[in-house]
Image 1 (cartoon, helix red, strand yellow):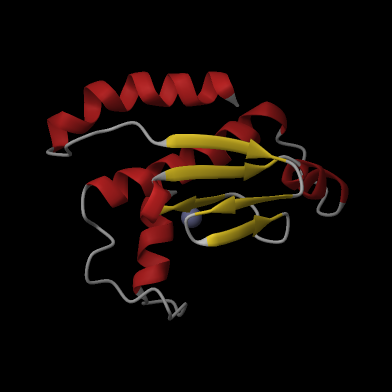
Image 2 (cartoon, helix red, strand yellow):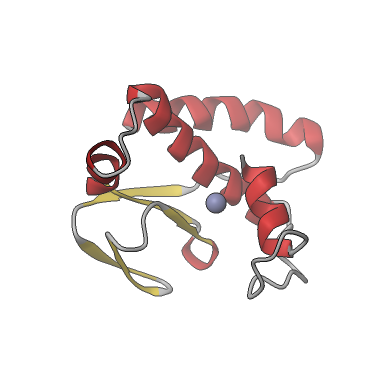
Length: 121
Ligand SMILES: [Zn+2]
């Protein structure tokens, strides 16, 4: 996870300014069970998440066990890196102002929430 973060920092430090993003690196926290964020408590029930108010990516480490044991995921390290990259992209959305003016209470196919998730992917 730390290696993925360093690679993403290196890439986006160079690439983000070329697309007009005033880049700053996100904070990153691996935790087991629960932790406190600027938005309240994050738990294993939430899964990997990026919280814009503290510009921090939170990865609950048992999430990967759940993917593997409950859902039969077999993507190995690449799948784990993908999750970090997805949350990192939410940070880029934040720094680019993409969250401003969006309605993230709706989750339908044409909603802002879906658009932001597809863009992060
Ligand atoms: Zn997402």
